[in-house]
Image 1 (spheres, one colour):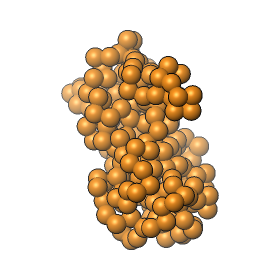
Image 2 (cartoon, rainbow, N blue to C red):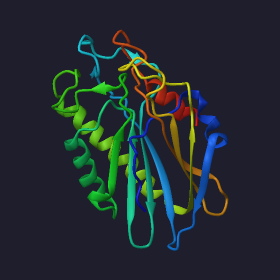
Image 3 (tube, helix red, strand yellow):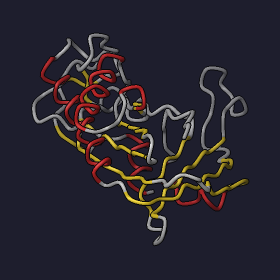
Length: 239
């Protein structure tokens, strides 16, 4: 299975309309026996850290407005497996992604190159886990280790939950909810919504929903000192 375009953002609380908006839908009928599982692990640090995304925010976070998570989906056939990990972080540095891939491979049958890790570009997330700070303060090795272990645990949890599954996907438009601040207009935007739904093969109980909508989670501003998932986190909780 090949999954593309998975810098996974979210849709605010309009996520419930995704399937009614779909202009095209399809169910993937796999010749191989498909299994899938999902996992979710908190990535709220248990110690003080800086927050990323603003050069003028130098304090550590003072509380948690809403939890932030690493969410993992593992899909497997008899011959192979892939993992998709989404996080409520500002960015996904290569060294963190590589460390998670290698650690997850040591605890499962996943190949390191078959794990895709992404970030929602959330400006209300902890920072300091990378040497490239993005205004997130000095590198904190303790935070790096915490994030590596949490993201790995999400993959391992998803892997342990593998069960017979079916994929369906759709695409539609969500217009007039975003604007282009660079060109200061509402027309040069990407309104497309992509949705991948994974259900149990027999019961059709939802295992996971991946959805993509282009946006910039920078609503709360540099004065915010509470960790939260910004609007993508709200949409993910709603969906």
